Amino acid sequence: MNNNNVQNFKDEAEQLMKNYSDSFSAKQYNDENNDYDILMELFNISPITKRENRQYWGRELGKFWERFVVDLFKNTRPDLFKPAEKYGLDEPYDLIVGNYAIDTKYRVGSGDSGTLKKFKQYGEMIKELGYTPVFLMVREDNLPAAMTAIKNGGWIAYTGNDAFSFIKEYTGIDIVKLFKDYGNTYHINR
Image (cartoon, rainbow, N blue to C red; front, side):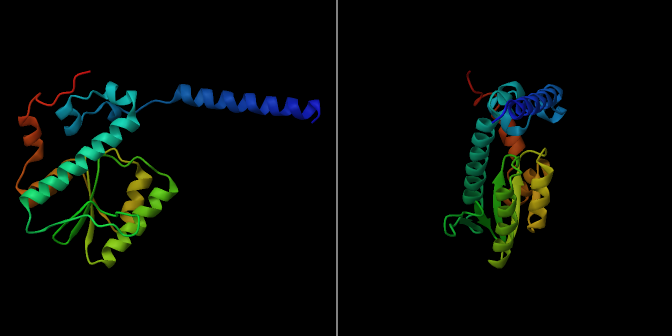
């Protein structure tokens, strides 16, 4: 490798690093990142705490949401409830309630092509099984590309208050009131 090639590489690398440094410095988070949701309020997780490790909190709040919704429907609608089933290695929904195959999400933030492809495939597969695919999501600040893939897959997506209304309609439980009634019982200690 000659000195000109090395210098060209260094020049290009420095420009690349400068461009990313400028981009990272200019990045501003929208106000939604400061919004609380019912799960954050239930556990007293502040936006600052959540930003410390977004992936952890998103995953754990999502797992709580899934288990909560499954248990809620299992106990309030045993007449309509069926647990999730595996299809190969995949589990395309979390539960069945009547004609709905429901998948729960805290927030959809992944826009990688594999995830987007699965939303479409799972929606089509669920319809072939004779169910209507439904997402129940806590957050309303979902990634637009993911929401487009969900809609293209034939899913009905309920977010925020619409998801809570869907749950109330089928279970009779107002989960927002339920969580608020717990007050600070489950606030985390950090």
